[in-house]
Length: 146
Image 1 (tube, rainbow, N blue to C red):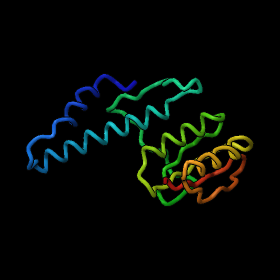
Image 2 (cartoon, rainbow, N blue to C red; image 1 turned 45 degrees about the vertical axis):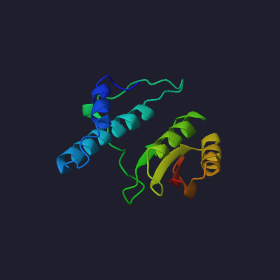
Image 3 (cartoon, helix red, strand yellow; image 1 turned 90 degrees about the vertical axis):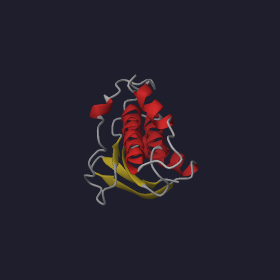
Image 4 (cartoon, rainbow, N blue to C red; image 1 turned 135 degrees about the vertical axis):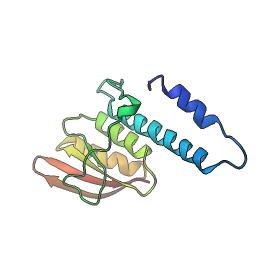
């Protein structure tokens, strides 16, 4: 569940205003929507192995995307090393659902079941696996969102 403070954000978003809204009105809508999306992203990353939220960030302190180390091109990174199947797939799918079509995501996965199952499941969902390469004791998967 998202923090209670989002009930006021929902009211802001639902207020459609005049037929000719001002630039400031539109900018406020965009700002509120971005805060909400980041809170959703943080919440999805906080899903534990029991598929329950373990910790939802305060909307004012929503974490930014993980650094693009070992990736380049400012591609966001989802580090799922140590996360077991099917949770790693669920977290990847949730992150991709919050991205635009054509955007890319780098996913770090362990050897074994994760690297066998996650790419296959993502392909079944219509996403494009652009690369899959071993790095030390894990794999880097780069996926283009459908």
